[in-house]
Image (cartoon, rainbow, N blue to C red; front, top):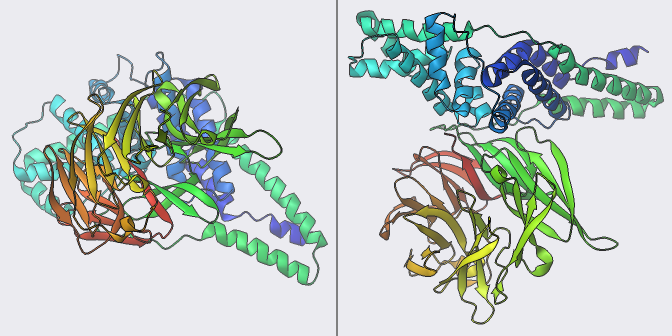
Length: 606
């Protein structure tokens, strides 16, 4: 029995989870109370957040920070409840509270729910800007900016002078971060400035006061034992593990015991070890979603864009606009008619659930969660029939078929959803003359609204960008370097340009694969396209023309723009992930990912 007792020693993941519960039970519950203002709802969300985090952690599914996952869960569910209920409202101080507290919470209440969440995590929870940025999806830098903006409003509301010098303006963000227990560059310069500046010393006091009055709000105690419920899952897991190990140890003798020891050692190693990650320069806070393909299948992988660190991976499918969920469809055709299982995966926790089963061999191509609509394509029809699945009621609610003279217009990888979720764009070839076309489908009415011919399009490599810059949509042939500007309303091609007259080898060898993300939209009417001869072409949308080329010495397969427009994330041939300075082309980070085949999207936050 001594061996069994020794086996009761907890794995690192179990100990980590117990510490997580001890450190964060009150904070998670209090944070959700600040968001939704209802004790019962807050208890349920806190319990569910701990349950999901424990399951993912104990199964070895969390590849990032467990604290980030916990608060990401709590934030998502809290914001979801707020969006669905007109009765829920965040926790506010009573009207008899101190004027400073009423002022502070009045200011925070003026921000959007997602922004309020980031401010609460930073200023009330003092969890740091990284956790605040990851949990809310707005990014670390934006979380710091929001906390600073709220403090600035509080400072002005409290009547502090506003005649700031440039040095005072530089000191503001540093002083705000310091009030949240964080550090920014320039600390020494700010300390030197504070010695001689009464105004900034007052600003520092106001910023500290803001955090103090926010943290002083009374939060009603939960009616249930949140910590006890949180530990219930890990206790059950521990009992199952000890029972299993005891059985193995009683059976194991001689060489068999050595095998058991090696297995247990491997499990411990898996839960302890972390991959070595190169962080590089020019760190960004975006969450980057990529399409990865390996021997085990297709995956949607969440990366920390500034380091290339993998945060999670879930089965491939169609990603929601907020990056929180992936809907996938898996068809089974053995022993009879095909049946497709629709599955939902959470990109934060990697938890997967079955949504429904539908007859047919279907694939997911788009989702609009605001309307609770999932769009599937019938593969058996040659990707010509689009179906709408109502997620709320769990059944098909409409369909549309493309014109019979078009080939594969809804094939996954060649469709793109308009930003407002109203139109699905796809590229197809004509049965008669093999010319290219951009097909536009109204997803609300489920009807074709445009079919625009593309001159000399090589459809095996066309990407569609449904960003309606100047009322136009764009299609790009990365192999041949031809960019098309089309008007869906006018059903005509407006303009097109060749990046280069010499075709790349990828375009001359017949059919090429579709690369997700060969064309991207940036700020101020700029497009970014992978140049066929090397580098990334920066294109003005109006008029359509190439204005410069970034890193002509490198060959890329995909590109996407950071949320602040200052960085380009690019894939080199072979799957190496790099971060480039948009203005200079300087390489800030390089990481060999190898198996990434394309970009899906960047979580731009607010």
